[in-house]
Amino acid sequence: MPKDSRMAFMELKTLECLDRMVITGTSQSFGYDKAMKSYCYSNRLDENFLADWARPITDRIREWAEGAACLSGEDMVDCNKYKGRKDDLVKKIIKLNAIEYGKPILVFKSMENCFSFYRSQSAKNAKLKGSPFRLRSSKCLHFYIYFTDEVLGLICLRIQSYAPFAIQYIMNGHHILEKLMLHKGLVFSKEDNCFTYIKDQEKANGLSHSITGPFIVDRLNVISKETIPLTDIMPLWYRFTVRQIEFSTDVYTPKTEDGIRKTQDTILQLCFQQPDDFITYLTDSKRPPKKPEFSYRNTHLGICAKFHSGTTSIKVYHKRDEVLRIETSCYNLRKLRVKRTMKSKSGELKVAMAPMTRSLTDIGLFIEFSRNANNRMRERLAIMWSRSYSHSKLQSISQRTKNQKVNSSGINVFDPRDSSILEAVGSPQFDLSGFKRSDLLKATNLTPGQGTYALRRLKAHKLIKKINGTNHYFPTKTGRSACITVKTLQNLVAVPIMAD
Image (cartoon, rainbow, N blue to C red; front, side, top):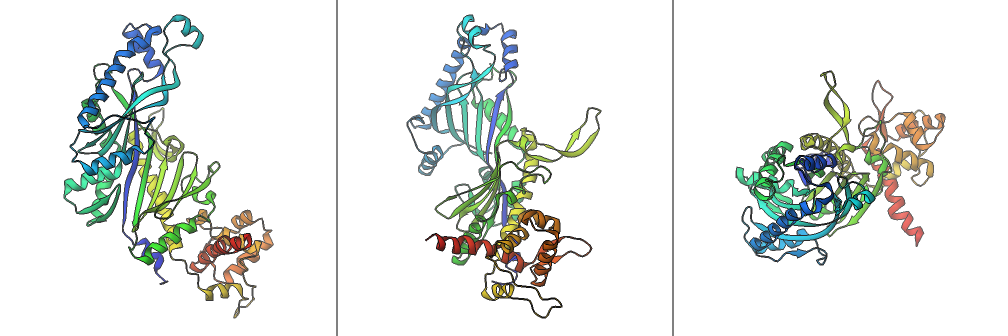
């Protein structure tokens, strides 16, 4: 491979964009326990007969969903009988028919678990099972309505048919970017939610950065009030929060046989990394993640490698033959800590590490957080992309050094101690600040004397280099190649053969 293959990977064109987003709308009038109690008192509703109050609203929502199905020209689909993916069925209809903005494409109904108020019919039941003003887990009929918006693209609206009548919008940032690019007249080609070609990549990234929380919530308020027939019942309308959000970085690799093979090999190398190391891309170093895990699945294009801990994950996979996607996902923004501006009780503003909120205004903070995580993963992939497994390099590090004041023994990649040293040196958690001898001792359980000798051997074989004026070391290109060679030889060659 050429010497500048790592830099060539970093110079490949990229597109950063929000991906899948799930936005939840909660009624401010009666979406909470205390809000419902206050709503009943102010409207003189009997707390023991909430079902009687909610039944006409449920009927109104059902009639509205049936009317949407009639407008779409398709029969309403029962999800409890249909076992396929809703999105796949909608895409088939879009390919066959011309779609109008705002017109329903397809309507689904599904009986699902949710939080709703207790259907109390008497004071006796209320005493036995508690106040009807408390949200409980139960089953309720939900309607899914798919339609296309002129600003947000393809959207799925999910609405609950019983109090508190919560709603949910499912959308994709790539569909929003497509509408913005069409409005600006940019030339591009798109398959599903992936742009396979963009003539002006810089302008496309600029438009992607304009997709913010206020931009989304303003449009959702307009769509909701024009679509959902509940404006006369909810004077305070809905409060929108983030339920799930993803941010992706698409790397456009060479569309050649060699480029596709190198991309697949790069993702394969991720499968032999420690999940503890890559989860550090998503968490604060002072707050170690809980139970980091790695999982993978096979797709029609290759392997999808995923590192996840709790509600946060980062994954790498082939989106198309020429597109490598790095994606950071989060199901609960309150679990992420970032630097943000906070206001104290005295009114003083200060910048400190604090959790995000589920408000759409914090989408900008999540984008910045995810961009840093994706860039760190991209740098690690660039190193793997530029791996060179030549026999001459492997032989040179396995033999005793020559032309040195003090000769050092070779590195045995099958020796447990040497392999553990190389794995520690190549750990992603040292990508930013490097590692010290104490870090090496902690990772390998060596004594201080053994750690000093290990550093001397690594420097003699030119596997690491020291930063002037510090005690920090970084692996060289040859050192990083040796680190991945250890895992490749052990996991791809030695272990399968010995297993046979």
